[in-house]
Amino acid sequence: MPQPTGRPVFFYSPHQDDETLFMGQIIARHALAGREVHVVLVTDGRASAARQTINGTGINGWWKDRHYPEREGYAPLTQQQFVEARTREFVSACGQLGVWPQNVHVEGYHDSTLTPAQAASVFEKYDALYPTAGHYTMSWDDTTTDHRTLGQALRTLALANAKKWNDVRWTIKQENAHRVAGAKAYTMPSDVRLQTQELARRAARAYGAWCPASGSFAVGYHSVGPTYFPRVEKGEPNWYHGK
Image (cartoon, rainbow, N blue to C red; front, top):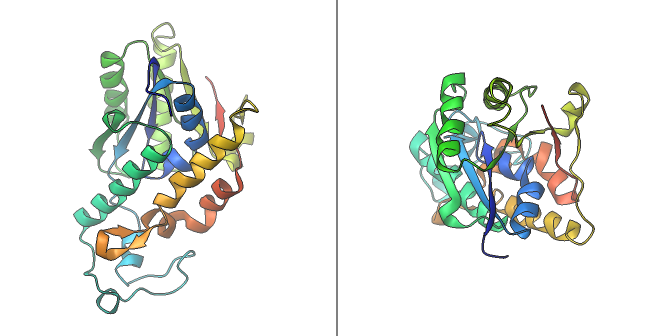
């Protein structure tokens, strides 16, 4: 992985795992090309129901059974401990995608309550620091609230000042691609296709690591394991669209 020297590009992830599930191959592609890749985690992910499963009060589609924290040797996670565990997964995944530690940023807004003004302030903060950068986030047509809020905020900025926000893209879940004109699979050059797929797979493994003694709770897989991570394992492409 080359040291970053090219023009900066920012990827804004609504929650821990979105950068891997819906942007992973694109992030890896830019990193391999030598771009100065930054990934911004916008919310803290505290509202996920995965905490209940890990704490033994729920069952989800990936674990398919109940956890017994006392028997398994760990205490139920507080909300803050849960956030910290999720963010450790995020940081590790970014490293696997080729993002250097100094370029991983955490904003920490509460998820499910992100406002358009907060979302816009995040974009404006990094644009002020890196005025020549490109910007990627999730689509404004996404069905998940924080995804949609970020997407709409970037779209509003781009429509208001197309000259300033002239390098912007939105990633989109494959199942929603038919809803946005111009949505398409991100085409990888043949010489890096296999490598970007593998880097995304390695990033996904950070979200499946289960070792409570070291603070790893496979939060990502507990959250959306059966739905989206198999697509990463299969090497399915990320999807995106423009304005």
